[in-house]
Length: 119
Image 1 (cartoon, rainbow, N blue to C red):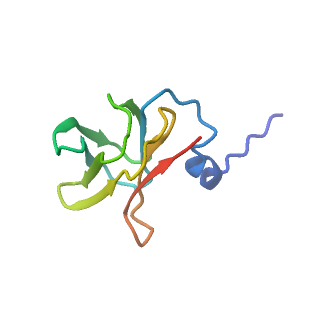
Image 2 (image 1 turned 90 degrees about the vertical axis):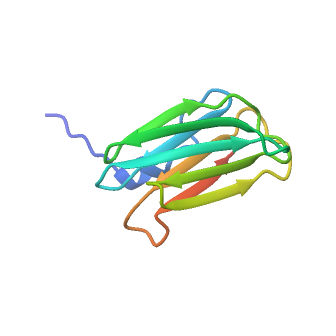
């Protein structure tokens, strides 16, 4: 007999142990409904360098690549369901291995979380 125990809260939030490639974007929908997420990157001159729309089913996680290194002045904009927007400006050059992590969770006080994680 084999028993498997899954610790959802540990697995769902542990992105640092995942294998990632350079310029990785991870979007995790921890909600029980589908969501649209638009991710935009702008360079220091406010020129668009990345603009992608993702549709995530409940509990779905998407890993994607973005085309440019995050350097001083890069601006990140994330829009959830054409309603909630989070932004972040990069104030110092980051490495190619840093990960943009976007988390959607209806049950937390802050439904949309945007962070940059260094593995």
